[in-house]
Amino acid sequence: MNILSADLFELYVYLNRNLSQGNRWIVYNKILVFQSKDLLNCFRYYIQARQFAERAKSLCNCSEVLNMRPLFHTVTSILLLKNPPSFVNTNHYINLTNFKIMNVQNLEFLQSNLKYFGFGDKLNEELEKNMKAQKPDFQLKLEVPRFNSTVDYTLHFKKSGQTEMYFFNKFDASVRSQERGEGKSQSFFINKGNGVTAKEAFNLLEGRSVFKNLLNKEGEKYGAWLKLDFENTDERGNFRMKQFNGQYGYDLDRTLANYPIKELSDPEQKKQLLQSLEKGNLQQVTMKQGEKEGKYYIEAIPQFKNVNVYDQKMHPVRRQNLQTIGQPEAPKQKEGKKQGQKKEEREQSAKKQTRKRKLSA
Image (cartoon, rainbow, N blue to C red; front, top):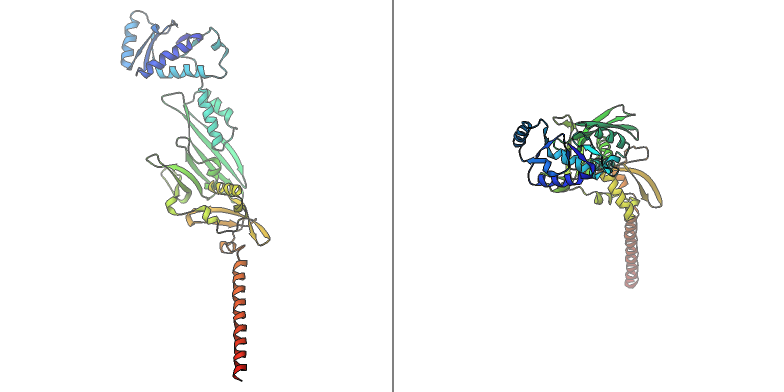
């Protein structure tokens, strides 16, 4: 369809009104330039549009049937462009049926999605390139070093069958350990913009637990700790996901209170500590014993309603020993008090007996 750039908005209003009325198909003269809505004929059903076009062809072989919705999205996209082509701002003709234009709002939304899920902006240029090519689906790859491991991510994008919109459906994560020489892989699906982030995926594949807000079948939100079950896989080859919700009874805040963690005394540091552990991170903390302080690493273990503790060389530390750090003085003081009281009672009793003996003598 040919149209003067100056008439784009008029066409937008006309198409928008017909779509709201239930019309889906349009018949137009592909030779003429759109200058008025009188040159267009809209229909609800394709068969109606096709029959009208066949009758029009008996007069001249130039009638064309077009799906109205893609045409509407093309016009809308041109009007919304922040930096439209120069000919859009002049009285140039535009062939809308051949004009392949990327939905800029869709691109910006996907770019913000990549940032939210922890992939940064390294893939932005490649994402834009693939969307401009109008591929039905495509994948983007990213390699990220993490500690003594490397994570290979494959992000999957798919174009809608009804519109020009692309969707970020899932990503695959594969961890390669430099020390152990082994790897684990998992696909993580994205539901309505919600899902596990890139860093959380790594933590899950490392065997740690992650707290997420999820949706049940009724669309209601609930919080649960997630952990991969490396012993069982589903029909897709993914590890099954264990869930520990609020009814399971794991309270991270109360659990941490059993340990003399210095950061818990500062509200802001405590908040950051809880958030980090909920993301599945192995977090460094300071344990205090009297005047002495030591550095340890902890991770949340909701399945066993506790935390794991490691020293600076990442060797496991017995929790029973740490739970008494900073607390031995109080029991000793109480015990000392009791012993002092007993001694004083014995001395008083001895004095009374001495006085009795003197009186009896």
